[in-house]
Image (cartoon, rainbow, N blue to C red; front, side, top):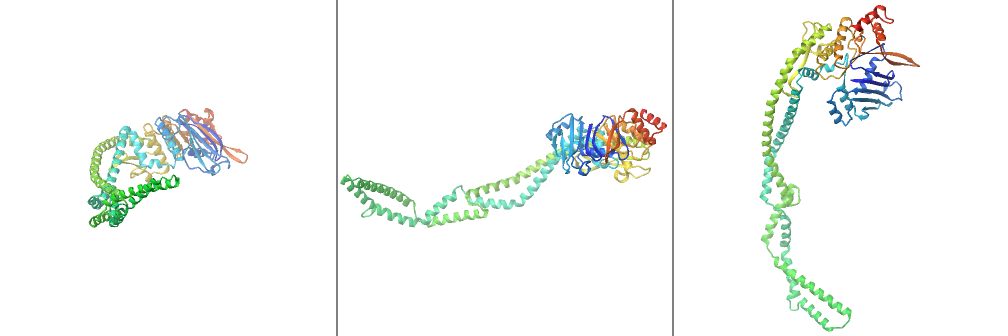
Length: 551
């Protein structure tokens, strides 16, 4: 419930603080005094669009703040999900800067307008004479019947199973699409894999073949060079190495004692050692080399086959080709696995369909049972409001597929006239009829449906006398279970108030401002008497007002 409202610098309101009661709060006042402006300000708390033109003083911030007494424990999850502090008394504030920039706060934490709307929609139900879209929505109509059926646990179980069902259906469709695409390329993938498997590549083979190819391609020339060099160094009539060793021997025998001469001998000895090592390695290489045109051709052909496959797959190494073959093989295997997965998902869907069918049938049975009671109670309340020929029917259609709430498609059909054709509400009900119908429906489901604070703005327009008295009784009963805030011109309805607020105008310099006053027992009777006969009220009007208040 709304405990209090604070409005500052909005329309013709300079500053206004309003304390509200738990039951029926009635707002009356002079024409143009700002009664509906209160609802406009309240609309900002509900997340309605802000307009800087509605500011009383340009250049001054507009503030609307409401203190809510939270009685819904399930709202704790909302606060947790949005990282907000949960308080039994929650403060919702909206600020409009002079430039028109809007900011919203919940318990002093900045929030988005969407978050504000999400919370306030769970706390306040605002109903105006021509704002009856909710009543016309199939979602609201089904929710009303479900509330009366009292099968929330069954509906929750169905909803959970339906979510699983929908997820599985999405998975099934995705798997089928994947499988269809995979089957289109299966033959091509198999052809590519066969090519790679026939190539029978081994890791590192390309590098080894390229090295061997280099040896084979230049082997004959290298053999000639090595043979000439080794013969010159060690096998000729005057081998170079033998000659160098002789020179070294003679230099050592000289024993000159000249350091430079000894260094030359040592240097020459190192050169000889290097030449001997070089000669041994050259001989080893020469032994490995051979002139083998047949093997060269074989290696050439193998390398060309590898290079061709690499160009085809746009890679550069044999390891990359091996990885491509592995990837293709996995894709081909996945096509087989896909069929098995599709079959498994299909079985799960069939199992859930049986369960959902049973749940939806039970939901439908419950709904149809309470629909008859709902129709009778609404028709009774409508007759109390002098709509004696009005008829309402809950029409059920069965969907050929599972919906998020079962298989029922519920639609309220209505006619206000005797012998009239039952049709969808929006096609046959006038504004006044819609207001009374909405009041009757909400009254019937109020005890079952988790309705928040209810705000009614002049839904009594065009009614008076006994009809207004009956509407007042209905609203009074509604207020016994919910906080109701109502702007009214009807003295019969105003007399039912637990808290009566009076809005009036006052002149302040060059401006007209709105003020609000909580009426006591005496001033309340005078105000209701004025509503009955005018200002000043007649003695009979005052007496009539007393009788209305005491009735």
